[in-house]
Image: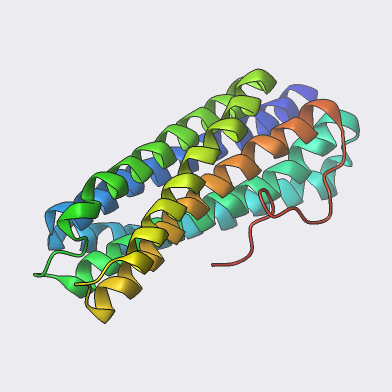
Length: 224
């Protein structure tokens, strides 16, 4: 019985890593669709998002069942509680990728991102992907040093969002639609980084048992 219980706990972690892999793929494909005007790829990302949602529902159901059936304590309890929060962050990251793909679909066949901002958007996507991959490693290995690096690296995403925002505010030649789309896109990518930070902080809670603040701007991400 104990071996089956430990196997169930390992499956919870495996499910989180699978969700992270799905989100990482969605991020890469959504950005490719956005920058290359690939409508078919955008549609694929949008169509795949409900699968990520279902994975969250399944994972949460397993975690709640283990909480009810096994009455875990200490680290096992923290793992299950943290997994419920982490699955929510991963689901929201999937939604953000779908939002990027929706922008690509809505603007097609016109380019969604003006030429002068393509490198910035590509870099924001790259940073989001790195943060997600590192967060997955933190979940798998409980590496708190890497968790701290994920938090530190998030500043570059924040800086890029501010940089693009200032250029939009200073510049002219943008259509109203471009202003709206760019403002949304940089927010989507910045929020991806925030969710990655949230993931690694949940692992910190799992390992140390230290409580998190009830709300923290850089960690507990509002719905968006």
